[in-house]
Structure formats: C-alpha cells, structure tokens
Amino acid sequence: QKPVAAFTGNHTIVFTTIDKKKYREEFSFQPLQLLTEIPAIVPGDSLDLKFGGLEPGDIVRVVLTDTVFGSEGITRLDTIRDESRIVITREELESLTNGPIQIELIKESEAPVQNGTMEGGRLYISYGLKREFTLAKKEE
Image 1 (cartoon, rainbow, N blue to C red):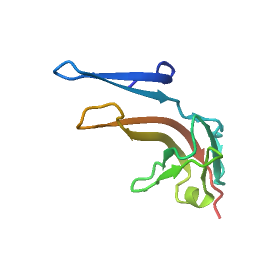
Image 2: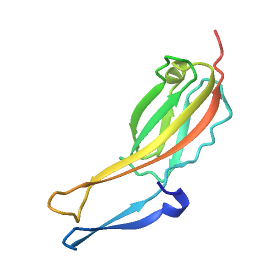
Image 3: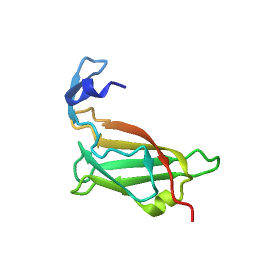
Image 4: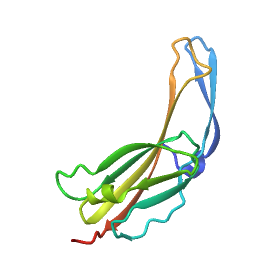
C-alpha cells in the first residue's frame, strides 16, 4: 500500500530469482478521480458520477452500504464506456434506507506478467475511493 501522490506514474518491478536472473516488469498507474462532487444530502434521485483517470473498458466495483442490519446494499461491477461515468439509478437508491450511506468506488486491473519466468504470473492493482453522504428520499 502506498499513498496515491507517491505512486502515480510509471513503475518498474524487478524480480530476481535464486540463480540471480532478473526479470523486469513495467506498468503505469493512473489514479481514479471522482470529478463529480457528491452532495452531503442526496434526495434519492439518480447519482451521475463522472471520472478522470479511467479508460474505456476499465472495470470499477461500485459498493454502497447503509446502516441497516441485514441490508444487502449495492455491489456491482461497471465497465467504463467512452463517457467515463457511472450512474447509480433511482431504483438502486430505493433499495437503500434513508440515513448515512458509504460509497466505495474501486478500480481493479489484472494482467499477465509480460517479462516473467516460465511459470508466469499476474500483476494486480486495486485502487479505491470512499465517500459518505446522507440519503434523504421523500417518503410517500
């Protein structure tokens, strides 16, 4: 785990085997940026979230939880399209209870190691943002 500011950019991992052979793997890390400011109080309409640091095809895990025991909340994977946005629909917000809501947006990427041993390997990077807001749906 590293602070985002210190980790943004290009990196090289060097793996040295017990017989001193070195393997270099290069990758770039661009952090997920939430460009939409989530208001402190959300009235229950949809949330249209816009992002920076994402490319079409990137996967973002969306997790929303309320404070009710036994509530399943919302957990889903979204594939980013050209607009770099995710919409949490009114219907999804309806499944949550009024009050504090935790939202986590997690960018996950996994790719095979390109310059590794014959055994291979995978490079996995996970980065997340957390926010909190109060859901205040109108009671009917």
